[in-house]
Length: 125
Image (cartoon, rainbow, N blue to C red; front, top):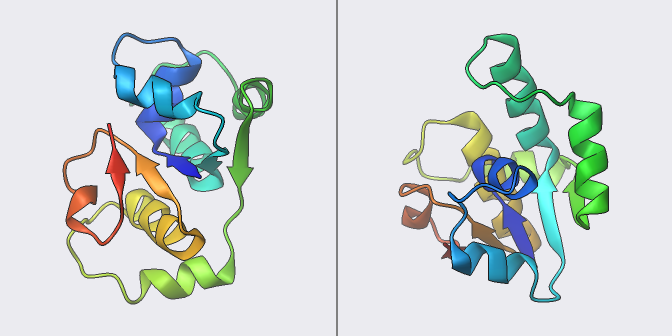
């Protein structure tokens, strides 16, 4: 099972050349692919402060995920408990939750982020 980071989701849905060949392959290898609801939250916040310019609403992005067979992973209390045990390597709260979810659910993370691999989680790019 793969959990994709926020930038991976954006690049995947927008068919960007920024997405690596490995990432594309992993997302279409027949394994279940998930995106955290926190990624949708992050996109909404960044849209509201004009940090990213994506013309789609969060509802539309969620619909695009369904069409692309990307499952939205909700936040569970066990994910939040895991955050408390993570070393303070990454300061981004969105990424910390994605890391906690991946560890808790036994998923790898498809990400270009160079800090996430410092945690005890498998990353692919």
